[in-house]
Image (cartoon, rainbow, N blue to C red):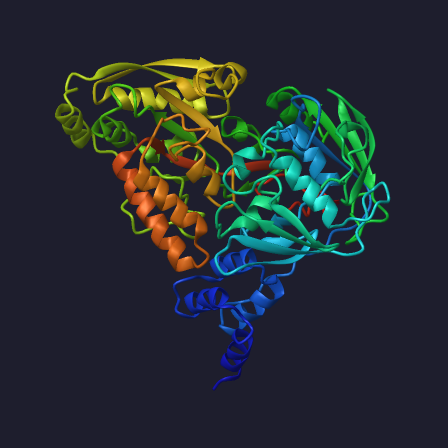
Length: 551
């Protein structure tokens, strides 16, 4: 037996059946290097160990990243926080970009969607994925000098999962993790007892769920006074509506941050942020919308980091309201769209084509053999005729004034004209569109036809549940399909890749047939930095600035 096969064989003796099934997928060629690293990291296997298996299988090694030089002040321009900053309730980029510098997660996603341990050293599921046990890092202190322990993790997730509270993370934890489900085993071990088995639970306690930063058990609110956390930076100053500064944490448990200091400046709109970057007043911006990207893409002093993302725009059709009660009408609208014009024109080629399900090309479980839906005007007209709408119909599309969405709405309006659908546009400010974000009090959730922005996730779980299951809190399509609900349950509980892939394929095919929501494209995330900036990790979740350096 060749040496590399002996190494793999020896390693496999200590793996569980689920872990060995991933190795089987790798060796059989059904899973590539990237997907193997990602899936293995979800199961709690260390990235160095996974890398050794990949190397032994002859599939290459991970490239080391060059380290920058320490010192200096890194200046970032971000959107003005939407209100008082509280990790339990915040939902806006301007707030969480700041908190990410001072507070930490149990684990974080990387550019290849693998999970990297942070405050957790390791984790593992039980046999059916209903209990996940996390081993916590020792020797970690909060900025106030308190030791980080299991009590802090329990308190953090009880706050986030409390249905009587205002936690923004309830969209993730509803039906997954209840208050009381996070249990201390010992001072450095926590077991998450889930409401239902889940094969990718670690993403729910990672940076993917941006509310899930670990706060002290003693946290009572008023976060802006301290920005308490275990992270590589500490608060220096915070001025609402103006900005914030942070300094290197000399007592940080890990590698000390490279910058001496961070300076955040707040801007009410994207245009002033771009002007500040061009003028050299800031070094880094949070992500900019596609519709203004050309300004920075053409600048000689600026580099734009393109990050493949699963963010998207959901075009929903209310399945309980005419004319969309007939799925043939919904299919016709999906068939009238020229997706190549959206990707190459609206998105300037910086997007992936969607196929009317949340399964973006970036997700490993996506079944890429499912035929891609393309524009077919003749078939769309035939479907409308069969549905009794040969002369077309009149409808209002309600959406929000954000990024590329108004442009998408106008293009969709023109595509629909070709099949006789007469669409009026109602483009609103974000506050009016979302309203109170509950049925009966939200143009988003109540409109018969609408387009909504969805942010990046590293796994499709939230996309599959909240907007599409029968009782989903974001089900703007009012789509109720027991078969779909069952498929999602099967996908979410699957621990092995084969079962995930099979359930994903079933979901994709059902959604193509039912078409409650149109997923036309998945735009890249665009992060502009000045040319002298290096070390910013290209992840879609947000800015992590501790390894950034300036030349």
